[in-house]
Amino acid sequence: MSLLIILGLVAAVAFWLVSVYNGLVSLRQRGKQAFSDVNVQLKQRHDLVPNLVETVKGYATHEKSTLDDVVKARNAAVTAQGPAQIGAAEGALTGALSRLIALSEAYPDLKANQNFQQLQSELSDIENKISAARRFLNNTVAEYNATREGFPGFLIAQRFGFVQLDYFELDEAQQKAIETPPKVEF
Image (cartoon, rainbow, N blue to C red):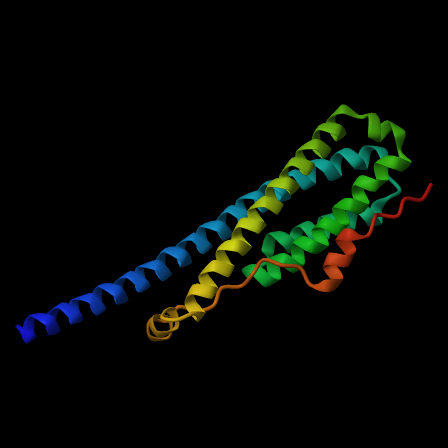
């Protein structure tokens, strides 16, 4: 009888450990999927930027430095690796794009251009999707990290190599650049 009780306790502990392990695996996979979803949205934005730059070029030929900044920021964002580097590059791209969009105020013909309006609308839509995907990613990362660091998760996480996931965030300077309205000069 006592052997059955011991076997029952061992089975219960084994079931519990497997359950915690599978929960961590599930959360880690959701985090990877969420990061992939963010990358899909970022790629759409990266693909849209050259069309936007080409449209603006026709109207704002003497704004070469702004256009060059957008192209450089886009290229840096395309080649960035890992959440921290991608977040930094995307912050720079967002700032450069806001300066590019601000050019439309100085060029009424550009502002009235239907192609520019459509691209601007697509960019706004993509920015909203990126924001939603980042929120989902950061919520998933928070849930995973909390489970990993809490009891009993940390017992399993340490033994089986579950590492902490990084948030997709901007540093203080990048956040300030995004929140600062672009300067338009006529």
